[in-house]
Length: 318
Image (cartoon, rainbow, N blue to C red; front, side):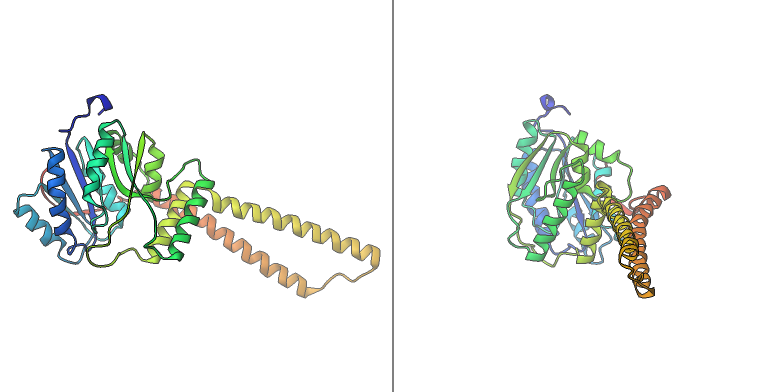
């Protein structure tokens, strides 16, 4: 929908990926209802249950019984947030699509300002964290390092403090749905598709209940996916390291020969050889491991397995 045709009554889908968020969902849905109803009469919530083991399905059933325009989609297992977002975008068919977390940290009150930016012609409206004061120093350092690396060695610029709290125009959703990769890093894909983007600062609210399901291991895996999906930095690092070691080894060999010819010093024996072999073998194995990560991702893409599998789909029809 072009900017000149955008009207307040345009349809709106809200995609909520949820994993064990039964304690927070009732409050969030109650807060969303008046906000969305004030924007358009044609709105719907698409709740993507990412293999929850709590009472998320019961919360969805209660919301449907209460007349909430809700489509409840349960995935067959926990595929991860990136897959859940992908599922929600594939099912959304409205003129504009809002992505939100189900933990209550994304304030529904900001949706009105995001919609106003969309009305002004923005294709993507992204909420940007004003600060990260609630995070620990290690996580803040890791986040800053990750985005510096990706943005320094990629042709894209991924905003460091922008997350998944976004309002997307139909054209942006169509572009994201057309991307075929299985190893998905959504923040990078948002930047890759482009379009006119506006940023709104916000401060995340405290979680209404529970704890984040993102462990350090999952965060590191997501970060590595982002680096390998949008940068060849690891390959370039080991290529440069290999060239440097080769040059150093050549210079050292020349020095040994010259020293032996000029000063008659005996050529160092087997300890030097063994130490050198162990060092170079370690470097080779590590570099092969880096290349193997890229090859493994190619293998994942070639298999063409679906990003997610739907086990249950009930509620408001498309």
